[in-house]
Image 1 (cartoon, rainbow, N blue to C red):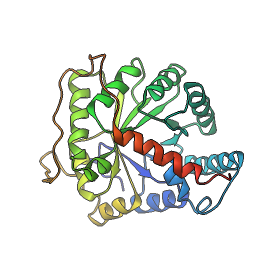
Image 2: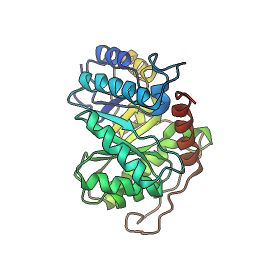
Image 3: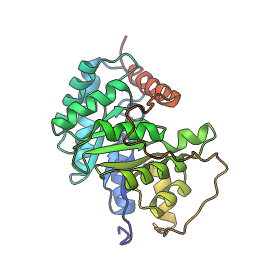
Image 4: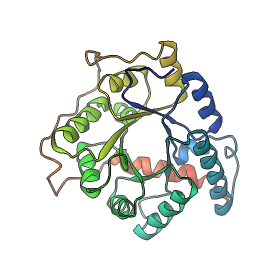
Length: 281
């Protein structure tokens, strides 16, 4: 049963519908699901096989439709194919195509110059977007600036906790910095979707701060269920051995925020490589 004091939406990070079913049985609820090319590549329907481009997209659509049917009231994030050379026109066309597949899509776009331009166009067309591979407060500010006028719930920003921790920084401090920035300086139209959650401690810290949304793999939720799906209060603490990222004031009104980050670049390439590995030459 969903905890009464739970104010954070719970998403599953997976490209496998049977995992969706398993988590619905375990938790009795899910508010949505996030997918990406790497997660899709792990689906048994795709894993270890090669497809033509049309076959791959047909299979992706079938998987997305199945997940959407399991979560008809939730959100399902579908990621566009993009690498560093993908043009605005190509990314926009793919975003529009993916959005037609299911009625509850959030289209995942990278936080790059082109990705933000596409987000502006899609938001103006009424499409929901999830801006992914966020590793800095500046990037989160750029998402806010690029999507002004959107309705709350139409735009997500996905800071990646675990990948920052891999290089020695506290991913949770970034999430908290973005939450503070949006709360103190923003209008509430961008929702935070904490991603790359790898531990129960990450999950508990997000729950204790009522972060808008979290997405995690099934293993994290199994550990949470083993703890009785406890929702800690604001006094919950976990001491991290990673370096905290300092907070920067007044970024939302700064037109010259820096969106470049090496982890965004490498993450984009990793997703592209995993997708391309499924294609026939």
